[in-house]
Length: 523
Ligand code: GDP
Image 1 (cartoon, helix red, strand yellow):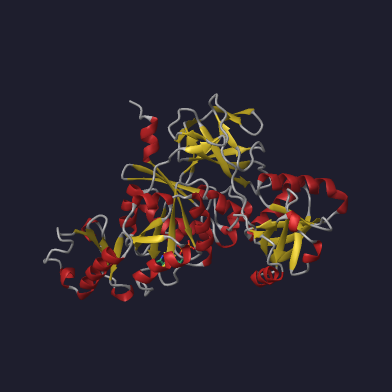
Image 2 (cartoon, rainbow, N blue to C red):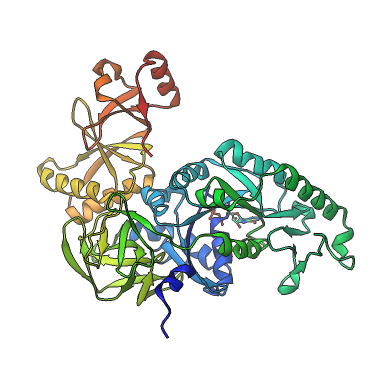
């Protein structure tokens, strides 16, 4: 008998890892893939990251940086669950796509370096996830090194992010003296530095270790028991409802590099993370994840940087029904019917043709220009339109002009299409109408320049304006004399005025000078 749609959907766990560069995202991803049996050897994902991985058709810029389409989504099975990890590029590869990917997941895992605590990029990504109100899990990494005390790390979650932390496990020792992990949820201890199944020791009824275990007499284990008592009494109480909304985060400890605590995390994660649920569509209707008709939305478009291959890949988050090859879908924006013959599901080591994908899965569609970011596609009779994806406040700005003044037409065409597609944001100087591009990461400018040349035969000249703090202002309150070199006045593509402040001081100075002016930040 074929499996019922609802059963397939309930097996899905789709999430992204949010972290600051170097916290250990790649390392933990790799360990998870090892558990899932997708890769056999540690170092595979890493090799890809550093670019020592041979695949012929990666996109040029991304190849240099070692990201691939295939690593954009990684899928594996664990304990009967189908897990999709969506990659969220960081470093210089940080872009609006990184944020938009967070619109396509059902949960997030925040990886924190336990010596450094919460770092800036984690904070930014957290903000986006928090706004979605989805569960956020926390993995405190690098326990094999001397880090901050676990209690401090949990307190910091509340202080800096405003989210309650609830410990799911607790380290026994730390750094040089790391001995193991007290797994509160699964009532067992995971020993450090022991391979195989015998690294897990079940706890006794009273929550301690059997006398026969050497560790049970260790003063560090005693300390852990004291800590556990303390957090049970004074810490946050585990609350599934709060977790579901992203108001509380289950906290796990471990060391990805030494594969410690990762399986303990994964085991609880597949239990606690939600299966795909319904989506709000058509401005207020509900679309069930097991609705028999296919529907999905495009959250990312990856352009092919190889000039010989003009195709692009549109990433679709399946929200309902089942996706099959050859499916006819309607594109809500145009009403046009498109046959989806050429789709790819993502495995970590190869691209495979997709046979069926259900809610929670990601499908890559080869696209010749039909799709835009945020597009809704559906197969049933009922029109399905997903809410617009949010636009994110850019932080980096560049002046842009066409190098060849004779080629204004292709310059404007390319610019308009790339802006529409969501590859970059466009602003104009309020007075001179000069073009200014805005992005959340440097990569977006590079991709823009490359695509303008290759797809529109338009060479562009870009002059960095640098980091700016973008704040929108109510047009009724605007007075042109408010603008100066430290707070550049521009308008967005809907002609809304905004200031690009040189830095936060310039913003504060402005606020002091004009206390009645409201400034707002988009997310
Ligand atoms: P990413 O930038 O977040 O993907 O971080 P990586 O996974 O590339 O890790 C950054 C560095 O930290 C690498 O040198 C890793 O080997 C190291 N690292 C990752 N996890 C651990 C850990 O648990 N302990 C220690 N000591 N180092 C780690």
